[in-house]
Length: 198
Length: 198
DNA sequence: CCTTTCGCAATATGATCGTATCGTAACGAT
DNA sequence: ATCGTTACGATACGATCATATTGCGAAAGG
Image 1 (spheres, rainbow over the protein chains, first blue to last red):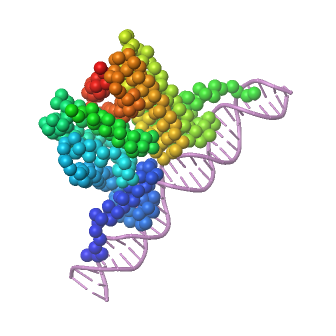
Image 2 (cartoon, helix red, strand yellow):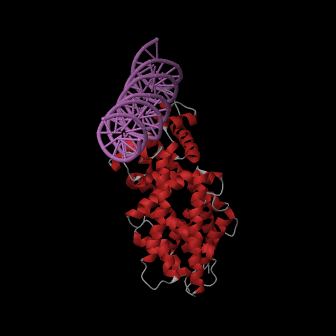
Image 3 (cartoon, rainbow over the protein chains, first blue to last red):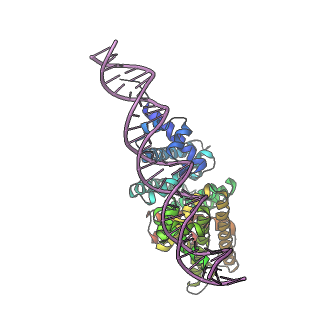
């Protein structure tokens, strides 16, 4: 056996270069050359670890879900007590907003994936599954809040979850365009959340 | 003076070819050659009417606004009486949703423009201006509804407009992905609208 | 020691991009 | 009639793209 290298770590390292490019010049600026340059390696190396560009982008997309899940988990975990459903619900929604550079990057990649999903049924199904997971997670929190008497009892959890997530999605585009400040956006979200409270 | 040609009509004809391409293959698939081929003209002609690609895309984007405005106007005009602010408000929001193929095309182009705007400050400013117009238009309707006693008097018109438009934006992505039916989406929108009513 | 095989770089290939440069046909003004 | 301008087509140019090919150093097994 020849030299031994951690294959997966190399792939992650390269994918992160793609992430950086996508974040500040858009995914349209992502090319094999650019990724190689950003990662500080040769383009041959990139080819060595990824069959083609689709493979590379696909890998980066796969990591997207992991990272978003981790971010949500972190946000929930770092929520100061009391851990009431309403506070946890807010933590989840806030974690989905691109409020700092890391989140911005993820949102940008997410949009790129969305665009690709429009013409790719498989990817659309994946995207859809992720969205469905989110909706049920949020709806569960809403139901818990209703049970605790923290949220109004006449709420339809699924519809409210749809509204909140659509709202988050819309606020994300607002933030990405610099068309609203973080405070403004959080205010808007809180305004809607307050409406669900008793 | 030599041959006389309707300059602006030619530009519109070419821009519409760009539209068609952008709608079913994304704006990333738009190239001078593709546009020329789709329009059934030579690439020299495209160059003759547009200084460069930016000029072309810019013109097409400009038409986007006009078309959306026209669609909203049509939707409002065709709303059956009574023309209460709340019904007009709904007409505006529904007009922004991609419920049929024409609207779908516009939404797709809109998203493509959004993507480009992320890396193009000028385009971002244009996008932003359009959004600001929408917000004030919606907010005006809300204020009118409040005045008429049709909507709750404690509403902050701007915030509610932000929420509604972000909601519409989020519902648009839902519709484009086939991740929800038109009925479902309209239900969600109406649910939120009902909340603003007295 | 030497052969094999992986890690990686260098460079070639052919397509496609935006754009520049021509050539020419059409037509109004002089 | 011819001249100048405009409309348009054909094609060339250089850059950049994804990808293929080739070569070579290093290291482990024989």
